[in-house]
Image (tube, rainbow over all chains, first blue to last red; front, top):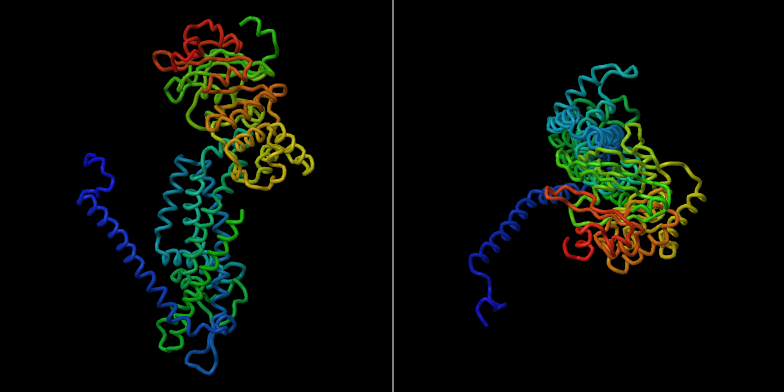
Length: 291
Length: 263
């Protein structure tokens, strides 16, 4: 038996060193990257959990400095859910329609390329600029006889932030649907939009959902655009044409507060916001998986 | 060739058809007739343009790539490349089964019903009937009748291909194009598809591209032999009754090919 034929002979030292070294780097860097993520999560849980009482979900914020009542932030949860849902209601259908246009009609034409370019710029615009834009367009103009900060303006700003995320991820998802599915549909006499709506969108649904969730998660945490548009309020959300509280603005306000119980509330609000995003995520995954 | 012309009506006819991919010529002056109610097999070495030819017939090729066709292609006397042709109607009349089974990621029932639903609203009971008929025609009904709601992707490869055939049959095409339908299947599944083609020949006109010469010999009425010339452009070498092609072909290249001397 020659040396070459010996199956138990180890690989040469430099090959082994390379392999071990690269594996170690991959593991080490993953660990390093996870460290800040996990510590944020840990700190939110550590600071937020002790104050997570049922009243948090049912009560209005306690007046500053008043420790005799148990405060909550039910109104901020209401506001965030309302504004993010309204923003999704606007940006998801528009976003999917634009994505269908880009991938099925416009393709690599001049208009489609321009739309793509503009959207990728829009997705890089700082959210505070979007807030100022919404402030100028909605807050400063009179809508339904009302002029001022409102949930409507807030959700408009959030929708502008969500739109490029939804469009770009949906277009990617549509492009990933195998060509043979489209051909099979065309060979049965379906026209292009029938193919898109009955085959392509269905097949792309899980990835589209991921994109929408990403957009929702992003919008739920946005603070800057809401400061300019929805502002805040200490009371219940009654209609969309009023200043409206939100978790993110509340966290922003309370975290720099001089009252320790408000700082504590900010931690709890972070935890609740995290929970809301996680629940949305899990729910939609459950729904799309069933198909 | 003369005696076969009297047999029946023309379903498809090609007169001097050239096919280009961009600037590259893939097929040169193909002229062939395809008769109603017959199985026509197209054989030939790889890259000779067999698939290209049938993809020109239902104009699916132009969806895949920049395919251009010159010359006259007719479906029951109508020019397939006339600008007024509605592609959706054309493709409904000329169905296609692809090389790899490509069922939609939905239930078995919905796969078969898809083509019907695309064209018209039909009552649930009529649709049930049509789905059953198509699945029975594709010799799949007995295997799936209790699992119509199951995902088509849970079927075996051979069953998936028969489902694709059922799906194509459900819209009642006049012509069924099959692009190497057995190349991804094992011998038993292949045999089932061949039996199926045999049973369909009464009702449908079938054009089948195949790599497998024995298959062509077993199932077809007429066989066309395609090959490439020196400049690698595909051409029709010979078209005749299958029996004649395999026993006493006129052209020496055809004889060499069917006897396994090249390709």
